[in-house]
Structure formats: structure tokens, C-alpha cells
Image (cartoon, rainbow, N blue to C red):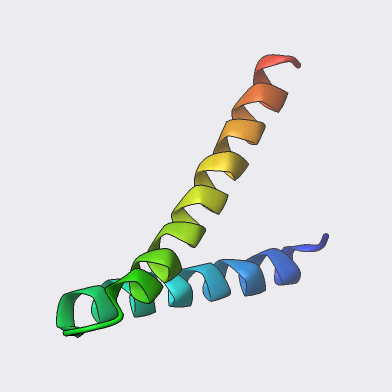
Length: 59
């Protein structure tokens, strides 16, 4: 993957996180959908950083 595609995916994850956060705060119903939208980017980022740490520690 080149840098532009990583930035593109980063913006998508940021948008998902922000939509989930705003929806969770201001929504009266359907909070489960917004919570899922909020948690998916967090899980992906944690897995990504964990993978980077494992790769860097083995070098």
C-alpha cells in the first residue's frame, strides 16, 4: 500500500469514529448502530498499532 491509500483509509476510519460519536451523543434511539460505528475504527487502530509493536520488537 502506498501512502495515499493509508491516508484515505485513515480518513474513512476518522469519519466513522466521528459519526458514531456524534450519533451516540445526539441520538435518542438506535444507539447500538452508532456504538458499532464508534467501536470498529477503535478496534482496527488498536490491532494495527499492536501489530506494529510486535513487528518493531522483533527487529
